[in-house]
Amino acid sequence: MKPNSRILLPGLLVLLLAFAGAVSASLGDLYAAEVPVASDSPEERNTALGQAMQEVLVRLSGRADVAGQRAAASVIQRAPSLVQQFRYRVDEDLSGTAGGEPAPPQRYLWAKFDKVAVDRLLRDSDIPVWGARRPRVLLWLAVEQGSGRSLLNAENDLGTRRILLNSAYQRGMPLQLPLMDLQDQAALSAADLWAGYEAALRQASARYPHDVILSGRLRAAGNDRWSAEWTLWERDDQDSYATRGLSWAASLAAGIGGAQDRLATRYAPAAGGDGPDRVRVRFTGVDSLPAYGRLLEILKGREAITRINLRETHGDTLRMDIWVRGGRNALARMLSLGGEFFLQPDSASRVTPPDAAGAQGGVGAPSAVPVDMTFSCVPSLAGVDEAR
Image (cartoon, rainbow, N blue to C red; front, side, top):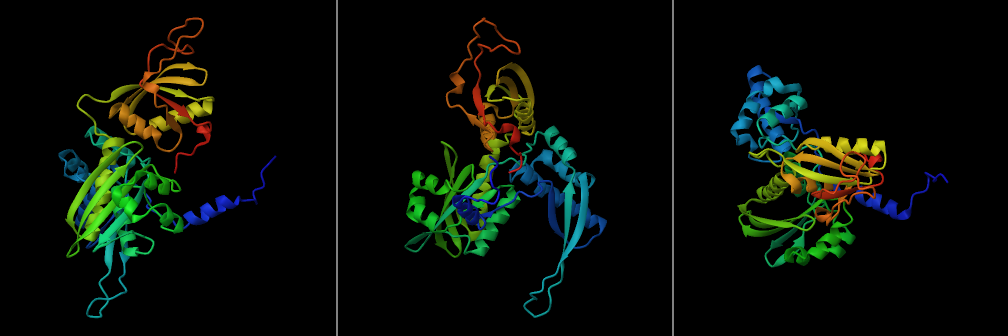
């Protein structure tokens, strides 16, 4: 029976209304940036295009230090020849200056660079290119001032929210900020977050779409200086780091940057001296030609994957050799994003037995050669949209 499109389940309606107020950062166009300029002269434009390219490289690679690398310098110098389109805009400051006179208008240059040419140059320079499929980061913050601790509500602190979202945008991080409504406050307390109580943290996070959780504990040190402890929570792993003696804005930006540096290393590893590693992978549940086409589309869209070789098919099971920078761990992480695939925990030890006829190898015959990992594909693989 065809469902009635006018009927919306109450629970779903409540969820949609709740997330209408949720705050998240958009990646935007990874190949575009906007920088301030003093004029529209060709010399000023070329300098600004180099600055815009630096911002693009940071977002593309996920690494803050990429612009300082020698290999990136030549890409930055070639920015004027890589630009695809550009335009100027003028921002009029109507608030005025301290003397009451209107502030002079600020001019900005927006530029978009050619994706194919930039990607080719970066790969030739062994600089990793990190595509738009990135871990969604959910951020929880607790603040200690004096003898009190509290969870930070970015909904009520527009300045902090702006710092967080701008920092995430500059680093190319899809950042989700919690609503901090009554449900969040009941599920997680400042004491839970300060103590690193994982069960409460994950329970409070379950209502939000995310791949990774970032928690921050900031302690006032006086004179607008803060000490912060940060923890990055993945599935079964956690990674902690600290920032010291920074302003409030710099502390938040450093927390976001530290997380993205670590995620970039895991999800967009740099090319090693020995080249990509071959990983033998089994995919189960590929039950149609559209599903197979979708599988190839997803794999080819992962920048760290350099080569794919189909070895065997048997029913709805495929066996592939995949060459990937970062090896098995990097492949497991990147394919676990998005919900199309689920890694079978004990897949490394599984062997596909020969069929009853004893056939070995070849398309259509299962192999006795062990694989490095097995992924189960969701039933709706062929209908899943790449955009999130």
